[in-house]
Image (tube, rainbow, N blue to C red):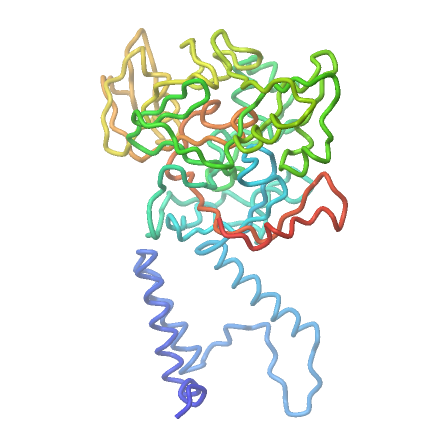
Length: 448
C-alpha cells in the first residue's frame, strides 16, 4: 500500500492531524484547546459542520467561481502565515545602522521564534501581517479589547551572552505622535513632560507585544556584572570577544585630501555615516572595525588614525540625563558601569544608591505600584526594604558602538520583551545605491 493510498483513509488522516494537534496543545500548555479535537473529528469523520463556509461545492461540469477560489486561497494563506509568524518565524527589516557592520541597514531577516520559545499573543485582536500601525500612518492596527498575560512556550534554549536578539523596545510603551521613532522618556528628562507633550504630542500608548522591534547584541545576561572601559565591554571581569562586526568611532586625519568614497564604501563603511571636515583635515568620526582600521591606515593620504573615547565629563549629548540610570555617576558611553543585571528570584536591598536602577522594573515591567516617600519605599501600599525580581533581564548593545541607542541609554530589557533570534538574511539591499547595484547578492540567504 502506497502512502497516498494509506493517507486516503479518513481514519488515518484523522489520527495524523489529531496527534499533531495534541502535541501542539501540550506545547502551549492549555488543555482547553483539546476541545479542538472535536473539530478535527468532524472535519475528517462525521462532516456535519461546514467549517469552511465560504467554499463552494461544484457539481460535475459546473463552472468554477474564480472569486471564491481566490478567497479560499487567501484565507488559507492568512491562517498558515499567521500561525507561522506566531509560533515559528517572523520577517524583520534592519531599519538603522546601529548594528553595522554585523547586520546592515537594508537587511531583511527571518527571526526564529522557537529559538527562545514563542510568546503567546497578548493582544490577539489585530490585523494580520501588520505589527502595530497601518503603513504610512500612526493608526493602530490592533485593539486592546482583549488582553492576556505574558506566556512563553518552550524553546530550544535561553538567551545566551553575545546572541543577536530581536526584542520589543522597553521604552516603547509611550510614543510621541510627531516623533514616533524617538524616545519619549529621553525627551521628558531633557525638556520636561509638559513641553514634550505640547510640542511632540499627543501621546500613544502600546502594550508590550505591540511595541516597536529592535535588534541588538546581548552583551550581558541575568546575573552578570557589566562594565565598559575605554570602549571595551567587560562582563564578569572577562573582556568581550573581539567579533569582526564590532566597530567604533575613529578620528582619521589626512594630508588635506579626502579618501575616495568608493573605497570607503567597498571596505564596508555606510556612506551615510561618512563626514569629511576640511578644517581638520580628515574625518572626525569614522565608524571602523579593526579590519577597516588596518586598511585605512595603509592609505597614502592618511596621516593618523586614533580612537574616539568618550571620557568624563562627556561630550554632548551624553549627559547623565541621557545615560541609564539617569543620575550623576561619572559614566560615559565608553566608560560605563559596573552595573549588575537583575535575575529572576534574586533579592536586592533597596537604597538611595540603587533605586534608580530598579524603579522602572518594579513599577512598569513587573506591574507593581511603587512609591517613594521621605526616603522610604512602598510597593502596593506596603513599606519594603528589599525586592525580589519576577523575571530575568538583559543588557543589549549595538555593534556600531558609537551610533547605537541601546541599554546604555534606556536600561535593561525584560525577558517578556524578547521576540526571537535572527536566523537568516533572506534579502539585502543598499539604501544608498540604485537598482540593480543596490542588491547585496552575497548576503542573500546568509545564515546568522
